[in-house]
Length: 334
Image (cartoon, rainbow, N blue to C red; front, top):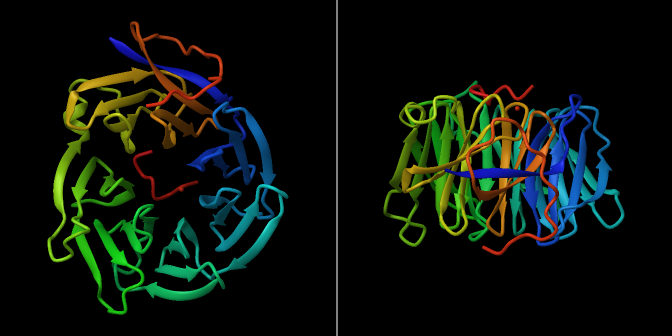
């Protein structure tokens, strides 16, 4: 069997928690919500560059890349900050009166998701330009929001009330959005180039949103169910996300820290790797390399190796060069 072999970028720690990973062309960026710190790792070496301490006393929710040298962070108390990597300073900070679960940005739009609504801010002046209060049912947390990296005005979000929404944040029409029923509480959404996906408690569903034909409803491309994959991998406990490298990759994990990587088009083709010591919380793909962060605070990079799956964790050397090629209450299955 071809196995996934992990290389340690950041070692595990019982006192911290990696909640989010993002990347720029120069850095891998990790967010830790016990120490409330942000770590940058230089690319392509993946060596630790800097550790930035945020000035929040609350739990960090997520981060989002603003540009090559800065990221926004948000905490559960509603505070948002912008850190400049060159100086290490928080160059801007403001607050909203809601608990923020998710944050993202693209072009001039910064979006936040809370237990009440989605807010859209204009980054040029940090003024609120739009809010969405009627997308989802009251008393249901909006668990994730993402902006399209290709079409900067397209926003994707999901909620505990089993709905996912596609919106054009620049539209002047009040009801310019598409709602999709995903059948069970939704936990996470994301973009795979021009396609989208939604992670629910027991499923990961991929769609073609037909951005070039706004009158055409999104079409399901793949629908993966945990119980179907558990027939071949009984320890699989949750889905993490989906990425496109040389092929479309579906990621899942076990609560013991195993990583499962499937071909989205043929899930009988899969790879298994051991490395984390607990639930894997987030992932990113950089030039075909899968990188994951976990509740054990570790950040690992994964490569393929033709050998039997190892029964014990093997800590491999940090790669010298990348090869070409929510307390989080809404993550219930984790």
